[in-house]
Image (cartoon, rainbow over all chains, first blue to last red):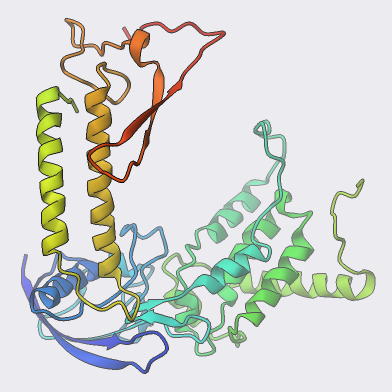
Amino acid sequence: MSLLNLQLKVWRQNQGQPGHFQDIQAREIPDHASFLEMMDIVNERLIQDGGDPVAFDHDCREGICGMCSMTINGIAHGPEKATTTCQLHMRKFRDGDTIWVEPFRAKAFPVVKDLMVNRSAFDRIQQAGGFVTVRTGAAPDANSILVGKEVADAAMDAAACIGCGACVASCKNASAMLFVSAKAGQLNSLPQGQPEKDRRTLGMVRQMDKEGFGNCTNQYECEAACPKEISVRWITKLNRDYALAAAKEAFVGVQEHAEGGD
Amino acid sequence: MARDKAGLTEALKRIPELREEFWSNVKVPGSGAAANPELEKAGRVADFMEFAELLCHDALDREESCGGHFRTEHQYDDGEAKRDDENYCYAAAWEHTGDLSKPKLNKEQLTFEEVHLSVRSYK
């Protein structure tokens, strides 16, 4: 194990107030530490010295919860491909490096404090259609609905999205299309998602627009930054599903109840 | 994990002391003017100590071994948990009385109509 001496430039901001970069020396950081552990060490020292520790989001620290964010040297989740910030290790940096640490910047992700942003917009998009309606009670028999292997695999790929928001942070338009297309596409691909497909697609896309996310201009920065390697092909599917749902809505309206009989 | 009367009594003596020290000596950086994760952590520590004390009260009161609660005083010769369905077949719902050291015990009796209670054995 070797120790790194780093120069951090960390974004400090309170909600609703202007922010600024603060120079912080991070001395003797073990190269085994993850990026978040490096921040923990920095914070402990700030607290010891009577300073204000840097606020940042974190939870599982094993790359599956989607809580950690941080734009590191201009790249969401840092320079390592297919990696969340918690799984980025300090051995990827060199002694003497200057590291710029910023929050995930987007109009729809207001800064709460320092590196913490409010990503509730994603929750509201999910609530606008990112679900399937099922009867509660006894679990249905296994294999009562047949799902093709290719379809199941594709839905699983989309379901890998952890909703971290790196796609938004890396997009010059702050577009949420990769997130929304993965969440809608997962359910729109499966037989269980068909009854609510049109309502889901229209609801989620319209909520996305309402939240202030920008439009997609096919730069694919999102795919490059995504820690779960969600493919931009899901955006193609979402556009197709949306066009179909919008056309149906214009000509026949959207059915309120998929199953009728009420 | 095993519990005994001596250990639980000791814990019930130490936890209030720790809590006293926490509240008189806690240092929370930052301010209340903005979101403060350090304040959130301090709040959790305070909760943990209250919960830990209640847990000790409950464990001390339950003179049997049952499920995850193993009292070394209550075991068979081969080390298996010795349950006391005669006296402890209830869920303990502790009520806050305003004094953390004196919670009030409310018993919610567990009644079984179809199944008869017996010793669980994996042997």
